[in-house]
Image 1 (tube, rainbow, N blue to C red):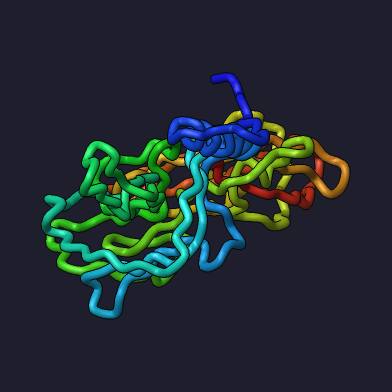
Image 2: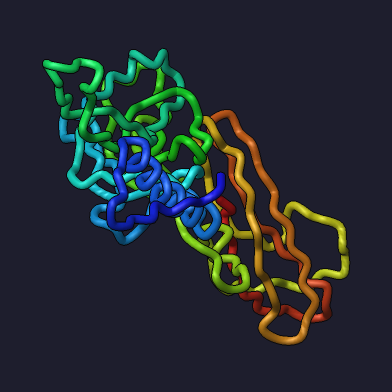
Length: 281
């Protein structure tokens, strides 16, 4: 669309269409700013960050106040905490459900013109964030994810996780939230994902470049239930002289998937290796 700003002057007789155009000018300007200078997601640092918590009885979810931006550049602002009920059996478990927020609006404050009904109308358009629980995985464009829950077959209630970094069935999982932001500098690993493992480890020498089961390794994550796919990026280097090879392996069992980082030291002596592992968004 092209931008036309209303130009007031003495004697200018305005109509409803003029005022609508004036509103559209500012709305579209804001949306184009949000779309092209910000990425969609939850805006961290605003109020309670739209954080999702289970109630004590486990049959409802509290969504904290906060702010998000969708992929169309629309503001999703929740000024006060809200509460939505959840009955796991309504979602035919075992299944994964998503707590999401999206933009909605409605006309309010009807002004009735009794003498001329054709001139009746609503005085305001209320913008509001729609909260719901769905089995449909959000696109994080029109619909923004706030949390997800893997429901077991017999689930009747949900709960907050005992370990936020590795939630189990029927526990709130906030690891997949997209954070709104802007890239104003060269991209770093921190922009692409969360650091899930770091440390320093001694790696014995090996002149065999082939992968071996006994190669020095560390556990990155052990994931149970559905949605075990993960993508990682690794930064690893020897503290002293040496040549280090590394790889990530996924090890499957009936109940879980383990992701492990393996090292191989192609040199004549042991070397300490510093490493960081990032889980990509």
